Length: 59
Image (tube, rainbow, N blue to C red; front, side, top):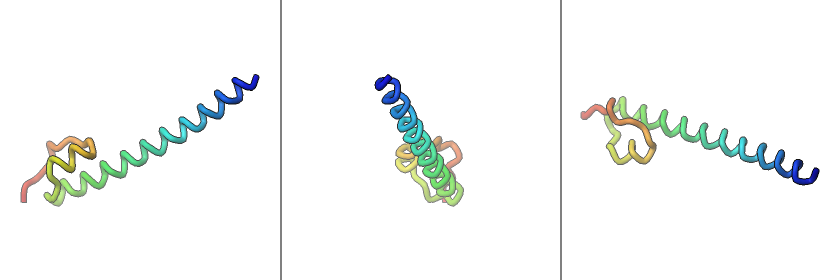
């Protein structure tokens, strides 16, 4: 039974980490897309954030 409790706690902790990572990815993508619309983003920034650079506009 102690193993079951440990597994449940680990599952909750892993789920919290996954939610945090996904929200962080969403915020970085939103920042990258706002940079794309202003034409200030380079391919290096977009590759670091993992967002597609097909909508990039050159000033």
